[in-house]
Image (cartoon, rainbow, N blue to C red; front, side, top):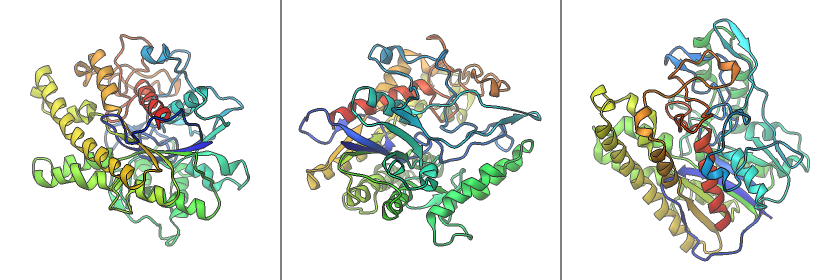
Length: 452
C-alpha cells in the first residue's frame, strides 16, 4: 500500500512528470508539507474574534484557515457533486484527531464553536478512501498531536500534516507576521521539536478571553513557525525517534511558496524588479524542488525514502482579495483595470509555476524510479471563478458565516458559507479560500494521485 506525502508549492497548471501511465495506485497514508492552505491545526487558533492591531477578524480565528462548514446547509460544488465528491464523514474508517477548540470571545462574551472548517486535506483523504485510492483506515492528525502521542502501533501509522500557517519555503523560521525568528527557543536551544511544540502550546493555554490585543502580541512572542524545509527536519526527527513510519507506498504532498511570493511582492516589486524576477523564477521554486539543491524540500524527501510525491502549484494570486485592498479606488472600481491586474499577476504566478514544473521534470530524469507529479490548480480555479463572476465582488465579500459562535462577524469581513449557487464563491478572508475552492483543490490533487 502506498503512503501519500503531500507537498504544496504553488499550483498553476497540472502535469504529470512521470510519463508512463500506470494502473491506479494505492496508498497507505499521506504526509503533508506546506503553509496555511494545508495546516489543519499545527498553528493554534485565536480565541478572541477581532485582531485590533489589523482592525479585522483574526486571521487565525479558525484553523484550518477557512470557513466553518455546516454540511446540512453548505454545498459541494455542483460540478464535483455530480462526480460523487462528498463531505468528510467521521466513521471507524475515517477519523480526524485534532486538538480541542477554544471558545470564541467577543464583546465580553464567549461561546462554543459549532462547526469545524475544512480545507483540502480532509476533503482529499476522505474522497481518496471512497475511491479506494487509500484502502486502510485513516486517522488524520496534525504534527502537534503526533509528536505527543504515546508511541503505539496505531500512532505509528497515521496520516500526519506537518504544515503550519504563515510558513515560508526555506530552512528558516518566522512569526505569524513573517518576521524572522530563531527556530529554537531559549528554553530548548538545541531541540527544534520541543521549541515548536511548547511555543504553540503556551499560546493555546494562556490566551485572554477579553484582551484581543494581548492575544495577538502573545502569538507573535511565542509561536515559532517552521519553513517547509524545517518541516522536513521535524519529519526526519520523528523517523529517527520512531514516532512515525513510512514505506514505499506513502504519498507525500507538498504545497509551499505563496507566502514567499507575497513577501517578494511587497519587498521587491516596483523597486528592485530584477531581484523580484529572480525570486519568482529561481530562488523560491528552488527551495521547493531542485535536483542541484539537496536542501530543497523534494530532494530531502527523496533522500529520506519518498517514492510518491505530489507538488502543488499556485493558483493565480491576482484573484485574492488581498491584492485589491492594496489598490487605489480608481482601479478597484473599474472592471477592465481589475482584469488587467489579475492577468498581470497571473503571468507572474505562471512564471513561478513554470520554473517549479521544470525543476520537477529534472527529478524524473535523475530518479526514474521515483513517482513525481505536478498538480495544476490554477486552471480549475480560474474556470470556476470565471463562472461565478468573481471579479465583481472583491469588496463585497458576502454575509456572515453560519457558525453561531461568530454571529458578530460583520458583512464584508468574511465570505458567506455559500448556501446557494448565487452567492459569492471563493474566499473565506482576504487571502484564504473558502471551502468550495478547497473542494476543487482536493479534487485536482485526487485526480493527479490516481495517475501517479
